[in-house]
Length: 209
Image 1: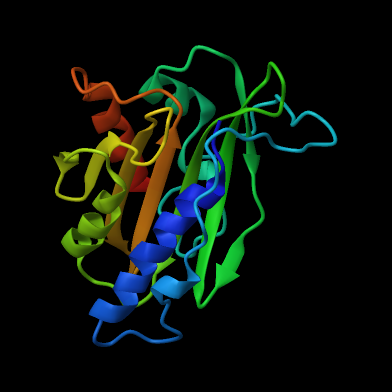
Image 2: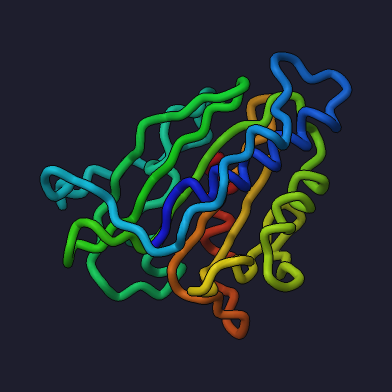
């Protein structure tokens, strides 16, 4: 149901503000003009063959250098956090780099069609940024309502400008000398009455970032 471009657009906004707020930032500065236009929320993934259903998950352990997104959250962890009962497989997208920002995308795809996506995980680093609070404030602009903070470095909310009212969860922390962010958009609307599962996934992502 989701395209990574929506998350990437948000990531560009966060990265743009990071470049503006960091006094000692190095490298090219991302500007708001580089933000991609939002994509539609109903989408399919073109695949020539079904992804492998064999579990090869190796959890990330706060790597010195980011190189992929899927190791940060397993299928079982995703399903448990966002109450997904259908069977899924993951698909790591190719890394994309623009204006000094490289992001990595993991898609969670329903095995019923191997085309429709349940959600996406986007992981990236913002060069020069040092304020977790400021970064989260910018990310929260993508929320329909006031975000529910789960810690000093994470929140969840209903995604704005989306007919499916998806769950939007963001975790940001300083790790290995850089600001790292994990953004998750999941198909089910957020469960505001029972945030325990979100708290668990936030700790998992934060530890692995």
